Length: 58
Image (cartoon, rainbow, N blue to C red; front, side, top):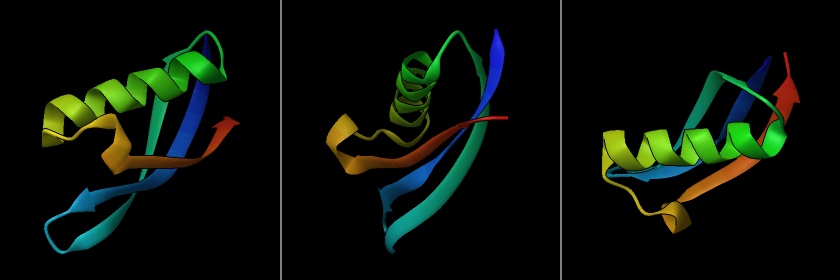
């Protein structure tokens, strides 16, 4: 498993909020799915409310 850094924005109460998360995943697609799942659970967001702008290997 590799370390990936996923960055983007999500809809918060006060407008768009930037984020950056590091996750262990097999590839970039899995890392992106993991972050979408995390934000959905933590912030009660739909996937359409989360915009991922960059996924890089750390």
